[in-house]
Image (cartoon, rainbow, N blue to C red; front, top):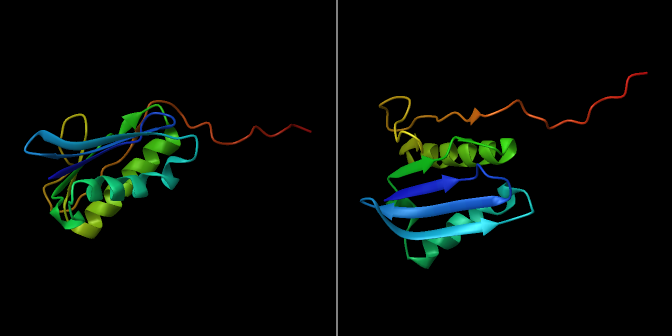
Length: 124
């Protein structure tokens, strides 16, 4: 089974579980809170809704490009952490390929623009 994670859009989390290309369950979560506060509980509820155990997931597919700098980092970090913990492949959403052929690998986020996460300093 494959866990799909998409946090690339601002204020939206899309997670799904598929088996052999067929989507078993999908959930979209609109959130004004940071996505990091909702995604893990969303994944847990998604698994529980179909009585799927986390160790039944054998691949994680993550969206690694998008408009939300922080959301992208959150989704990719969670996908990489779960892949490491479960010793399973993490692939990017666009070409479904990982960076290497090991059991566990790291997917890097690809940002569409420079981050704008700090407040400009006043010049004195």
